[in-house]
Amino acid sequence: MDAIEQKILSILDSRADELQALAQDLFTHAEQGYHEYRTAQIVSDALKKLGLETREGLAITGLRASIGKPTGPNVALIGELDGLACPTHPMATDQGFAHSCGHYAQIVCMLGAAMALTDPEVAASLDGTATFFAVPAEEFQGGDLRDEVRRTHDVHCAGGKCELLRRGEFDDIDMAVTTHSLMVDRDSDVDLMLGNSACTGFVGKTVLIHGRASHAAAAPHLGVNALNAACLGMSALGMVRETFQEKDCVRVHPYIRQGGEAVNIVPSEVIVDMMVRANNQAAVEAVSAKVDNCFKGAAMAIGCDIDIVNAQGYMPCPERLPDEILWDCAKLLGDGLKVQSIPAGACNTASTDVGDLFAVMPVLNFTFGGSTGDLHSKDYAVSDLNVAHIVPAKMMALLAYRLLKDGAAEARKIIDGYQAPYTKEGYKAYTEKMSG
Image 1 (cartoon, rainbow, N blue to C red):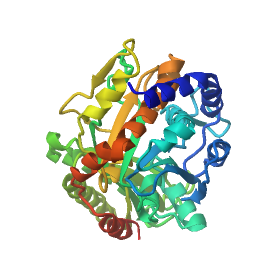
Image 2: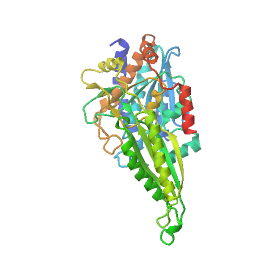
Image 3: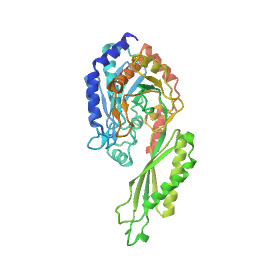
């Protein structure tokens, strides 16, 4: 451990109480994606208090600030602003949102890293740029909200990172550091898990089925029942599931957003939203076509018209076993922590728009313990305040320093060794095709 690393740890130890108070505040005030106005203001105030100049209003609520030297690589330190709909969580807001995925802790982590890296001596040692980037809407937004933010703010993508990439807000970023509450082995006593497990990507899909209304009791024969077509489509979907290959980790999960007009009227307008997931883009597209056939065939059988609207989802995440720099930084945190690698060869069937960052740049990821209960459930709770809030901040700050010290040699090595599936311009072209 060198003197700068000792100083980083000392700074964060000295500001631990401040970070814990911030964590408590954020945890009890979760906000919906693209509506994280209060959270974004807290981040803005904290960054400005550190003497940083912010750029705000990025994809509605996103914001960023940078420190370091513009002559070297630019490393984004990512924190996600949003909570999710979980009205049964004991800390849910009146609107039914809760931080039962732990995103608030990412903001604590990012701001803790900013506290350490803005120290003048630490900042002077960075041979590149550290960008503190608070991003909106990691949780995929439903069709009604997608329609709202497109109409009111010209937001084309359901995921915040996707939209920021589309708008060019990552054009100057060379690599990213991300973190999350433990995604796998949540029943274990792991404090830090290093690396990024493979995750599925997906396409969002809205099926609009148009029938004909009539009196459900007096004249059902005059109607064309759109709800019957939707149910038949889901039955067909169940019958094609045996064609999904296990190696692709396919998941398809629909729900009926609108099921008709009234109980005594033959349903004439039905809307089905769904996500079609797989661990590779080719499988996402192949399964998406099968799903379309299920609902098109069902609509034809019942006599309905149908429109299917695809929305850009998230790209699959590749597996990235821990780089040596992750192990080196974790060792600096002391011997009392339980640290392990992600399980090699496992696929997390959940999805994240971190996959869209992986599509254009290298990403270093670690996840942290200190919580119990399932993610996205009423049971999610913090069990160890230090592991959930302070340890990740230390880890992110140490990573940024090690990536950017000594001519940013470590960052340059990782950037040069990464083969991105897309160029940034190629990714933007893909999003325009998918989202219009």
